[in-house]
Length: 464
Image (cartoon, rainbow, N blue to C red):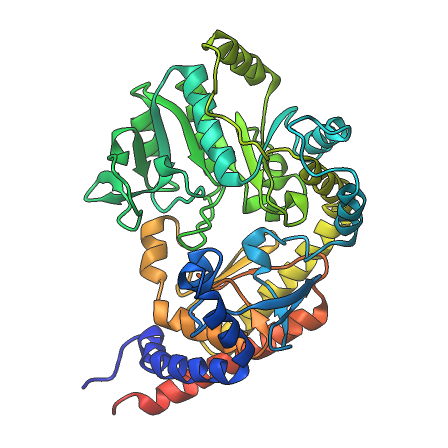
């Protein structure tokens, strides 16, 4: 057999062997989690409250005993430096003290009433101050926020179609669960139980392709264009310079609403990516960390758009609008959001996060250079991702080509077994206000050990 040509190919020769040994090590380290998984399997599908909690590449789910700040302890008493942070849900750290105090106070005052709590006006003002959008509505999840924004957009424009990007993810909104195959937008193959052809009213094109956007918007059929300021779920794909500004100009020209889903890019800076870039969308969606990790999300919009929304609602027949859920904006959520926005998501917190994330980026790049690996670190504020390509992808196709599932899994499990947790997909990393220099140093040390193990073993296994 001839020798392999690329560094990735050489590392892939050993990734499966390393993954097998790391799985056995995981089992040795986590007997309590294995026992809990067996017990939970009696009543929970796959032994977990939600089936995706089993998608971590571990032989058994990892059960958590306690989470505080930038660390958590598993059921077996092992400590982890947490760089996953609930995939942004705990971006401001686990159980921030101001949020814990607010919840303790609120717990004696009520949980939910279907009526606005007295702190509601202050929460609205805090949202407007931080994100620069004057009008808001609250939801329980970012999925709900995106779904409701699509309803509003269709109601106020009278148009049916949605424009998204190949590789997008906006929660479990059916309209966005599409892929591009042979130039056609089709329902995503992995979507369970789908009966409607989602390509009827949704069109997906390549990210960073303004010409494709202009061709589609010229039809005048699209209610809105929904995107993250950078794709973050197909592998991190940053916007090229001027791309989001170009979207803003094109959507205005063609009467299409621009929706920026900042559920992940809230990591960019205080106020989110769009505010710091000086671009105001028609709708802005935020979620996950804004209530300190409790289920909460929101969408903001302009006063002009608020007037159009009121007109659409007032003109509709009486009855359920299809927008809103019973627990949205409940008393506990408002208390947690108020504490998060006013005491946790501060300028000082972001300054700490961004400084450490920059340090981590430099350190990771130094490790890659030391091992002469043609990989890159893509960073958006406090969010970083290891990608198996020399430069960041510009669209989902490039991101998919750069993915190597077995190599990714081997690196992830190697780090997990040594007390460092990254996300279970794409090895994304987040830095929170409680992350320390010591945590950064541990990640860099273990990552270096992982690469040394992979490279040394793969070189030994390359046929002569």
